[in-house]
Length: 243
Image 1 (cartoon, rainbow, N blue to C red):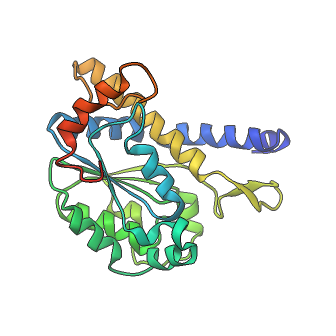
Image 2 (image 1 turned 90 degrees about the vertical axis):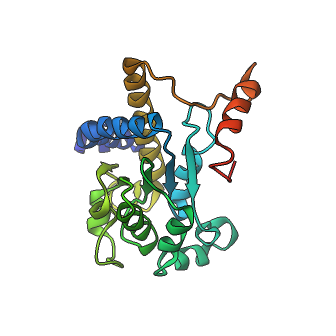
Image 3 (image 1 turned 180 degrees about the vertical axis):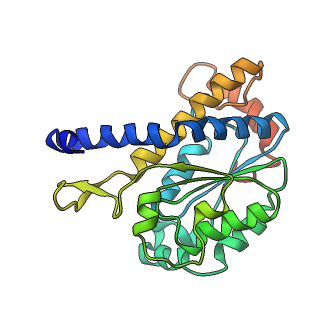
């Protein structure tokens, strides 16, 4: 991206957003359709990630404008805020992801969404593998470039177990600046959040076309927000204990 490089970091980020549109536009529409089918059938969307990908779990769960039928699937050990080095170790530990997925007990018509930029650590790979084995389709939000450049800690990758792969186009190492030797300004959260927002937008359009009223959270900071959300809490609290 020589032109974008001359524009500095903003130009490089915008170029990567264009790359996401080109690489994942069709898959985003497929993901929206899969999610709509699941929600229409009263399924739950199980969302997982580790380390900084937990930012995307927060972005999908109990979020203004987001789906209410979302359950976070996670182990406290992969949260870097209370033991950063430990979180890396736990993400690489075999068996943790499989146990987390088994405890959540996803089943059709549920869907799983797993965020992992590299998709090479056991934790996200095992969650995807376990969900797929239970007949629950997996949407992988990952980067092909980052995965190819990452250390292989599992025989398979997250993408190998996914029904749909959303490529975030994050470069190996994540950092974007300076362009000649990137060492700062990570892009993975920006690109994954944009990808998820595109999924939600396509989901909204598809639901409108089908005449489906999606269960969506409203900001608690606007008039009527608490009342609207109370009905959703009553509907999902018994199935999503994290609420």
